[in-house]
Image 1: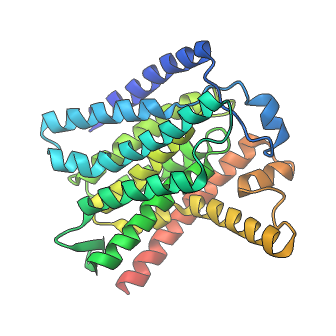
Image 2 (image 1 turned 90 degrees about the vertical axis):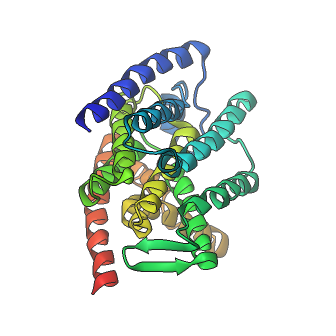
Image 3 (image 1 turned 60 degrees about the vertical axis):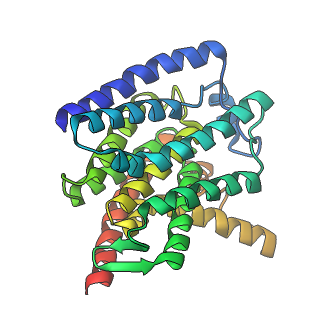
Length: 316
């Protein structure tokens, strides 16, 4: 596993470096939202995007290596990587549409949601165990409500990581922390363990290029892949509810957006200076590194606390 982790990490770093150079020469850059932080328009407008393509290439290669080595069989590989890769390709289509339109907007919101839901419905059947969904050891839900719960979490994870991906190293850092925690609580013999190890190697390697000042962004391609992988390892490891603490800070980010929308549309006022909440702290005068490192720490603490709370609720 040490050799496997090192191989994935090295591949991510080396291939991402080459990809940065290719994208820079081709001027495939991030098109930022005009209503976002104004300093981002000056500092980040020329930064390449779509780094998540390397996530897909390296993870698929790692999956083949695990199958050929006998660590996974093909159904296990599909259960771990099928949904993340599909989600990553959806994000890639959105990224390409933004690039060719020279716009920060790709698919329309409902179009993107419809494609995400369709992918989630298809792959959710992989995680159903004889018509039942395993939420945690000893806790099962029957087919229809189980499918609804699973699809909700799958689609939610894609968009939650996407919303979190707004500062250099933020999404890659918090997902790396989530993968570390998953590795610590899941037996190493579980196929999901190797999936989390792959995710950790990818995110750790990506941080080499993505930590402030970022040389490349992951794009929707990368955020969708990571969100999909977080759900898939939990579902395949029969620990679906663990995705809740693993997505702790991502959930806070989504909640801040929901609160802001309700406050503006319902009461014509703002709760935050800007949402998602990481931009609120930027607007309050925090520099980018301080926000990112603080969110990493907050995510780590909240994730551990929420894990033990969840365990207490389930097994008390």
